[in-house]
Each structure stands twice: as C-alpha cells, then as structure tokens.
Length: 346
Image (cartoon, rainbow, N blue to C red; front, side):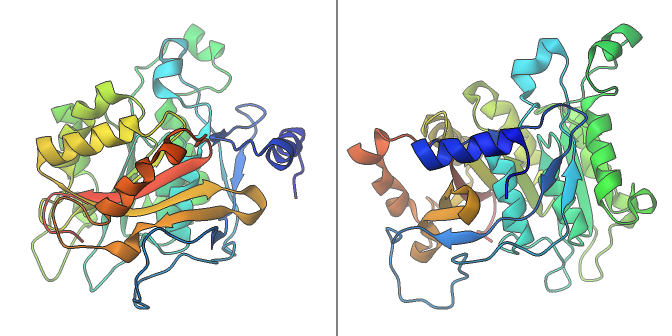
C-alpha cells in the first residue's frame, strides 16, 4: 500500500503506462528507504524446459516476513555525483537483497564451511546488511573512499560525513548487536577497483575472527556481491582485477545482478572480458522484471538448462533472448542475475 506521494505516482505510472522504475529514491537524505523483501513469481513460461524437480525454484515465493530494514542513501560530492550514482537505490540491489532474503543466495554456513562475503560498490549497503542480518559469519562491504572533506564541503552536503560514514551507520542501525560485532563479523572499508593497497586491506579484514576447523584460514572470499556495477564499460578492467584478487580461486563465486536500462551491451562486454581476460566461468541464473504489487516476475529461469562447460551454463538459452523482438523492446525494470568464478563452478 503506497503511503507517500512518490509511491502513489510510481504506482500510477506502472498501472497506466506500464512504466517500470530502474531505481528507487527518497524525498531527501534524511528520509530512509524502508526495505521489505518482495515476492518472486513466474510471469511466463521459461525458454528452457527440463523435467528436473530437484532444481531450486524461485517461483511463487511470497513476500518474506522479515522485519523492515531502514537504510539511508549516501550523497556523493558534486564532482563525483555522476560517477558514483549514490542518490538512488537501484533495482539490482533490491533484487540481490531479495535473493538473499529468500535463501536463493545462501549466505550462512554450509557443510561447516564459513562463507566469507565481500560486497563491492555497496552504496547504501542493502545486500551486505541483509547478509549480516541473516546471520552471515563475515561480511565486508566496500565502496569508493571519497577523500575527507573540509568543513565547508561537508556543510554543502545534505548529510554530513562521507559515503563510508553513511554505509557504516546503516549497518549500525540495522544489524543486531552491531557495535559488538563490528570488526569481528562485519566491516566497512574503502576500495578503489584495481588498487592493490586497498585490496590487501580488504583481504586482511576480519582475519582474527575467521577460523575453519577443516582447512587453513583463507583470506580470499568465498562469495562476492556485485549489484549494478557493470554500466560503465571503461571500469570493467579495474573491477575484474579486484575480483581476481579477492575471490577464492578454487571454490569462490561472485553473484552479479545487473540492470538492463542501458541495454545488454555492457553486460555482454563484461562477460566477454571475464571469460577471455580472466579465464573464468559464467553460470546464467535468472532474468526478472519488477512488477511492484506482485514483486518480481520471473521472465527466464536459466537454471533449468544447466550444462557442464566452462563457456557458460544456460548460454544457449541466454543467446535466444537476442531475437529481433527482444532487442527492440523496452527493458526498463528488467535485471539479469548470473554467477561467475575462477575455479570449479559452484
């Protein structure tokens, strides 16, 4: 039920004109975005059919009954406003948070193997915060470390403090026992993609609390979270450099959610660079569309067509989306979800 002028307006656009948002915003930096996990349902027949009832299905999952999470959106300095894109909560972040809330992305211990999670380009930090709230053992959320500002520059911002200050305050507000757990099970760090010193700081973060009784402690991460980070092709090289340094080379995976409001080109260029440059694997997972009252509508579930090649599981189904009808359509409100890695597909 919409309760603000902005939400009523967005509902009207979707109902009357099928206009779908690509991001959500608030009335100002002092007003929080209230996150409640959305439902996920099947909109139409997936392009790949298989009689395998053992596959996990996201179809017809109702809205998750977890408690609302309030987060504030950071404000970038004027010179970095278009570069950092921080004044909105992008659909990709919301869908990734929903995947975590519904357990489609598992962030808790599995077979006594501790998940070590790092979120890149976190912004307001919603996916990382949901991981911590759901009991993830270790979560490190990172974003660009905006240089410290002078008093005048701080006063010109609607909210005081840097991007990382707002991100950290969102963790402190949302995570139970957050102050006691900071530096032990969660941390907020600055990171410029491709920068070796900041990569080293991330790898060594929370190391004192990380133990594994079955194998030596590893510093790399078993799970990376990337939400809406692919829109600038020029940054793909630096991003991939960080991924290869942070990700466990044998068993690690990165969950990637990307919006298609700028077309499929940036996503395809990233995947080409990942395969050709890093020698990594790709697994196609889902393509969904925001339907507001119904939550997410699953357009394609590539998980039903998994193969076994390093070239990518579900790739043929993915390619079939490139017909003339789909290429010419409006894909606002549509996001794709896939996983990538370096070693054996997980």
